Image (cartoon, rainbow, N blue to C red; front, side, top):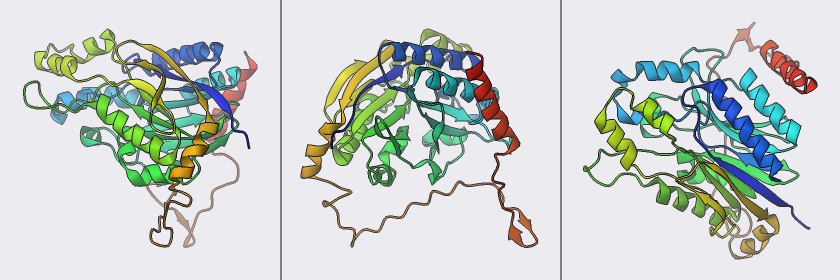
Length: 354
């Protein structure tokens, strides 16, 4: 058995803050560049479209109604035109794409999720994962997700899984992916994650915390890791500080910046690292290196006690209501819903005109 050798790219990039259309265009430019440089997998950070809601940390909810409305307005749908463009770029270049975005809903104008999509090299949607639990102040922005997206995609370049930020602190979520033979683990993070006012104690060090969590997963799952953090550019900082709040600016400036980096199956750092500069980071993964560490500890093989531990994972997609006809749940038609069918048609048209 010979496993693939794959070149991967991670975009350590800032969004065009709270502007979905412009951020999608920026994402496509990064996909174009990464593909030209030989990458077969291109990864984007948490909530890249339209940006991470740092404002939820800086001000109480009573001050954030306008920010929330901007966030909702620039959140996108999994079957919408923005995702169609990204899928078309993946297909055009024959690359896999993992992208974080704020997802809006057909059934509520105010319900959004922190979501990650995995797109195949033919443009198909391979996985649609909503963050299980929004973390700390994120609860004032996003709804809780479900287990539907706890899936590993078995692709020509390896078995790929992804978790969003604090989910990498959840050992059961991580185990759910390891138990599916994950070989490449994507962890998506924001650029900063402020938890303290300057001078009031130790702020959350997401540089160290992200490295510990991702390193632990690579070591336990014996999988390569992609830590993909966002980047804050001056435009994003100025947008957040437009009110002239000096304390908010000080919090932003003093909060540790997260890094984008890569890990091997022992948890050791390999490849490029980006922290204070925007750009694409690259690494090459030889998946054959996943084999030897399994001889030491294989938590989904011999190094477990399945007679002692019984892990069950519910991957049902949660919906707001179950509709009954004559006392029985309505069946879902085999054909795509009209909106989904329209999305597929738009995707095919996008390809046809290129």
